[in-house]
Structure formats: C-alpha cells, structure tokens
Length: 288
Image (tube, one colour):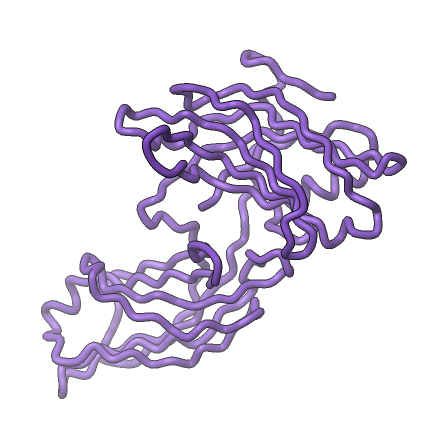
C-alpha cells in the first residue's frame, strides 16, 4: 500500500483537475417607462452530475448584489443536465440609477431533498457594464461558487482495487490547507467514509481525529467489499469533518468517488480500475 510521510517528495501527485461546470443562458433588460428590470433565466447546458444517479436536479438563485436578503429562485428541473427553465423575474419600481449600482448574481444549485443543496456554479454580471435599454441574451460559463465558502482544502487519497478478492482499499493519506472551522483559527479534522450502493448506505468507516491541525497526515487504510457486478453503482463518499466537543461536528468538505462523479473523481476511479492491485494516489479538492 502506498503511504506518504509528512515531508515526502511524492507531494507532486497530480493536483485537483479543473472541473467544467457547464454554462447558463439568461436575458437582461430595463424598461425606462415603468422602471422595471427584467431578468429571464432561460437554460443550462452541460451541468455536472452531483447525484449518485449520475445526474442533477438544478435550479437557479438570483440576487442583485450587494443585497443578499431578497433572493428569487427558479423551479427545480429533475434529473436534467441541460435544463430549460424559461422563467421571467421582474424587479419593479427600480430606479435606473440604483440598478446600475447592482451586480446580477446567478447561482446554479443541485436540489437535495435530504441535505443541504449542492452549489454547482455561479455567474456575476455588473449591470453597469450592460446596455440595459435593449433586452440582451447571454451564455456565460459557470465559475466555482465562492458563496462565502472559499477553498476547503485538498485531500490525498489512494485507491487500490483487487478484482480477485472484490475489495477496494481506500487510503486516506493526508490533507493540506484545510479550512479553519474553530474560533481559534484551526480545526480538529477526521475523515468519514461511506460505501454507497445506488442511494443506499452500505458501510461506514472513519479515521482518528487529528487535534488542531490544518495539514494532517492520517495514513489510514480501509478495505471495502465491492463485488464486480455492483461496481458501476458504487460510490465512495469521503467527508472531512471537524470534531467539536460541544456541538455538532462540522463538515469541512466532501469528495464523491465513482465512475460518474466530477472529472477529477472519474479520472481517479478509472485509473484504479485500469491498474488492478496497484495503489493509485491523487489529490482532490474538497467540495461543499
């Protein structure tokens, strides 16, 4: 099993792969006659799959920054990576001199009935940069969400598949630049692993807690029984947590490893399958 020491020269494993987040189409225009800003959310294209089923349930939140109190939302489009929303939002009685001080902020999220909605990506458009007198339509590439979360850090994970024994061994090697979750500017991280089959939780494992550490070295390995015929429906969810004695433990970030997650995760899964019995290590950026 591949193990790395804290100062190992092997730190140059491939870093997080830049993930394509798809794009969104929308229209913006202003009516000087009735002081109304119109925003139409038209459609999304090539959105990433966020759910175990290999798809997403996307919807869009709209804000006119810096105002974050008043948000508007589209309907959720179930199981759709190329959704058509075609919804119109009117900001009525809105003087033009105030409109041009605002930034249109669109956040595309994946709706999750059981937990927090997953951010997919965002677009910001300062309205003073647009010719609002005419309704204009734009395609904009989605950027990673900065919605107050910032970077959550990275985790070095090794995967090893033994097809004879039907075992996937997941090694949690180390993390770097973890987000500080405690008041003292640090965290007490540990890693929780869930083996999922379709949407069902099968088995849970976890590492020890590393006290007051944002760059912990774990070097712990966890074998999971995964018969060949369920490999395509298997997801390993790796969650880096901050242990809190007095309240609920905080989630620092997650990774979903399967053949149908994001590009970085899929690459790691395919590398594991392509090199049976070899430990394949890769850095992953933690996600919200």
